[in-house]
Image (tube, rainbow, N blue to C red; front, side, top):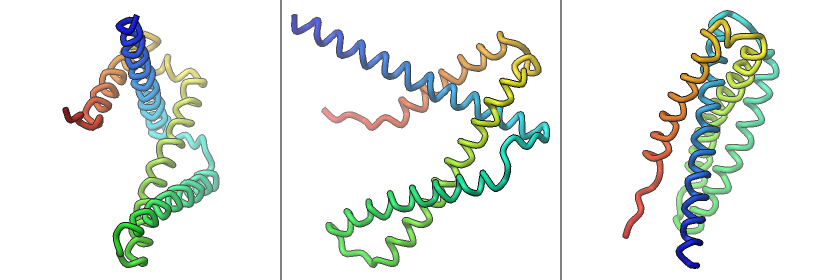
Length: 150
């Protein structure tokens, strides 16, 4: 009975890994289609909306890193301005990355809705590209996974 439960546990692990790699692959695919849409010169999202997204992401990520810095400050006694400066830089970097990913994903979705799959080469090219993205995302996930110590 216990061995069957262990099998179910590993089965869930496989499903979670498959779902995560497929979701990341879809995100990569939509970002690629968004970049293709931008290369055609289409402006799918207004600049003021992009700037608003950047501001919101900047605030969210900066507050996250400041709260993390406060936790570290209890352990170490670092200068407060140094921690604030690092939190601002980390927040800005992640905000730019998140805004880029969000905007290009939305542009990629609009590109597909307008029939961009046929311009790329049809459904067979779309499925092949998705398969390649799944392989790449699984490789990245396995490389980013922390090593387990025994």
